[in-house]
Image (cartoon, rainbow, N blue to C red):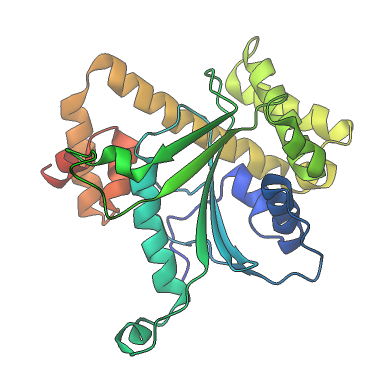
Length: 275
């Protein structure tokens, strides 16, 4: 699959998503596993603009599991189980030859695990579970659901679920960096807050090599993420529905994924479809 020109890393994917050793470290930390350095890892992260024009996800196959990890910096989207369902089908298409679907023998698939790491500013539980079945209409004992998908959400703000950070030096330092950015934002503009966090953390040995090598990228990536988040909040507060619909139409013309348009504009999927 050729890289999509609209694809952009987030700081999360830049740090965790390309180095198999760091992916292994993160996996062991979250799942309390003990996979050794020789454990085989197949990175399956989608290199296309699926939900937005950058993707804060990592997916990989390890130890018979297909793990999908997504970082969230704002309020958790309760549609995450449905988004994960759409995402996982695309990954299975990527890692399995579609011709195998027509063979008599059942195709073996790695077992999926869905994880969201939350580090937004709003208060959120240490752990929460979202289920696809809770989204179905008229669901109950008399109307059982034949399709399920469970997403595990973990709060990784500094001091929350500390056992994860204790098992991963990289995650620990990432949490410190994010906390520093949040703290700086209380007293200074966003760009200044990010630049200062990058410098202070680098000077104090926190993600030192990563921040020194990618400092300009980190600043730009975080500014882009914050700008998009603020734009969504403004649209919602000011009731700019017509403007959102106009933006949705323009994005559809340019070939953006419909789910990505919904995520960016704040419209529902049906509103985007009918725009």
